[in-house]
Image (tube, rainbow, N blue to C red):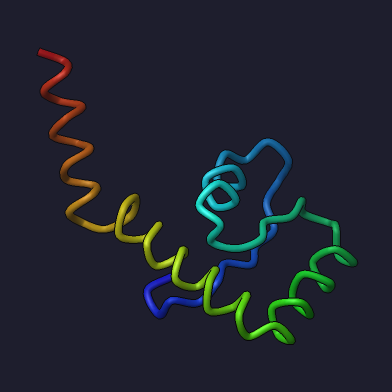
Length: 84
């Protein structure tokens, strides 16, 4: 994410990261154990430079919006402020 690389991951079914990453178009998340689909997704990313660039850009954007220190601090402060 920090190097603008696309995300390729495997998660247990029902993991909320899947929706977040797919909604952001930041990469491909598959169910743990779907080895053939994982291989196909990796092969597609390896062979499609435009896809790598686009999804990598979105992955970096997702990092900045959801996982940066500034974003985390803002979310914590907002959460604490709403609790008052």
